[in-house]
Image (cartoon, rainbow, N blue to C red):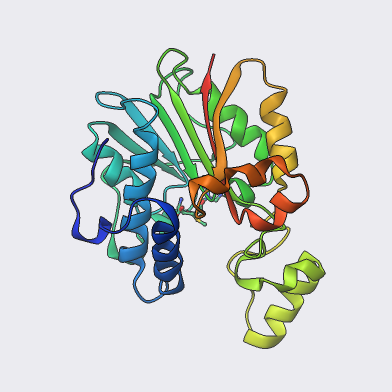
Length: 251
Ligand SMILES: C[S@@+](CC[C@H](N)C(=O)[O-])C[C@H]1O[C@@H](n2cnc3c(N)ncnc32)[C@H](O)[C@@H]1O
């Protein structure tokens, strides 16, 4: 398994201890983003490396912001490229990725079959046409060795409304109105503009109808692996999952 040698990447690697650590770091994400994102990137790489090697390949991180995951993927021997819509996101937390391209996940300027790894974390719920984004992830994936690694926050997750949570359960527009009343400004992730409803049911159905895609792993990102069974329980999974991981390859 590939290990990221970064002091902020260290911590428990499995089970409940890993989940508790992730939640603790997430709670402090605003004040100590480096600790949360380095740990999460290392955790992601550990998971990816269970499915194969990315050494010598091109790894694309769509919506990868300032490049924490790209940095981790490079330690595994990949040439990593961030594709990011918003230039300012590349410079967050006083960082910037080594190799980045400004572009739109729904229409990537990369050739078919180019990537050994296509990764995207928490971007799918931010694009107006998530099906187009998934199609693009599949299109650029190498069909022989390529791996797709997708994570997203679904709408009915307790964090589905992002900073407007949990009021999104009353409706996205109402949650935004409440946020504006309380904070005197619009939320960064605004329902209908930069945040959209995304249901696990629909995303998994999309994968099922793609004959050229094989799903290798589905599970909740932050919960222990033994809780993967919840993805089989329709309805319940929309609330308990928080954030879903789908690992796939192109046939
Ligand atoms: C919630 S952040 C996630 C950042 C990072 N991937 C992570 O997991 O921490 C969403 C990111 O997606 C980017 N994004 C939104 N729409 C995009 C699009 N159409 N194409 C590419 N990136 C996009 C945003 O600029 C932002 O950097």
